[in-house]
Image (cartoon, rainbow, N blue to C red; front, side, top):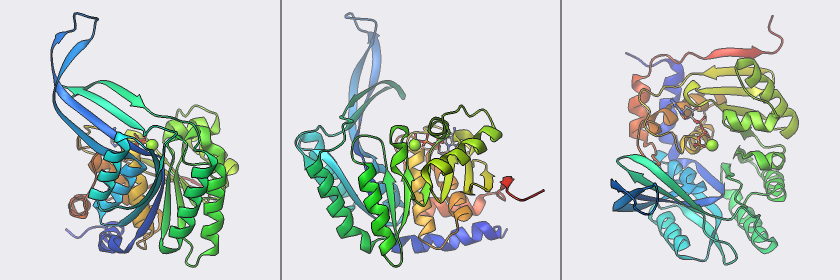
Length: 345
Ligand SMILES: Nc1ncnc2c1ncn2[C@@H]1O[C@H](COP(=O)(O)OP(=O)(O)OP(=O)(O)O)[C@@H](O)[C@H]1O
Ligand SMILES: [Mg+2]
């Protein structure tokens, strides 16, 4: 059966991902996994004793966005900060191994963000976080701004992957948006926001909060479609962004082209194993799609399909063009529901 025209356009864009140059700016993290078995309860306290069988590291945060872009066949560059410590070394090796061009500043005054997940019998037993959420100092901020200024002219888009760990600041985003506006063609600026930094994103092209973040950014609880629309409109007022996409977990995505046009795309996931990192996949796919000639709705259907694939895999997964094309070819017609069209009767 021939795919629907919308899917056909996405399929045609996939080979063009390889010419998308995307700058990823944000908080870099090291995901650390300790996998083992529990055979007994500790005599020292009411906790399981995990016998470690294997250990692994993957790129997290902004690094996971870059990794997702590389997996899709796009060309990511990464600008970030890590500590001058052993986890920082592991991070830099991983960035290199993934073939991601990078400027990662090593700041001796802060630890590398590392999140250790202890997993026994395929279940997470505990997560141990080591990090600083302090904003980076003036010298490092200057270094980040210089790296962005040097690299931006060669890029089609910027993804700001903000985990509120100190890399992203109001002045840095302001400089980025102002610099992008001087370039022709102008790189688009996409931001995965965090609530405490909600006033940093003035004038960006696209914000991608999840439902919880959108509710907190708008200062309300989101119980249904009407609340989602109201929160979205409040976010537009506050951040003066051009477009907005609220990810709704199992409910898919609400896409606001602007405050007056809101559409809903349902999820395509058939099985769900691990939803961590789905937001990173969404913004990576959006950037790849938008810089390969797709419009916002097409890029959003693409992002939703990619997220549907990664949630069906275990542990910080990513999607390849091949997997994507298979899923797209089998996809039933996407039912895009119009939630709000200003001016419509
Ligand atoms: N339980 C689920 N079932 C089906 N699809 C899901 C589920 N959870 C997430 N997704 C897919 O992943 C997308 C992003 O998910 P979500 O809204 O949870 O993002 P997020 O909270 O930012 O994720 P992250 O943990 O990476 O920050 C959704 O829009 C949807 O396409
Ligand atoms: Mg998220």
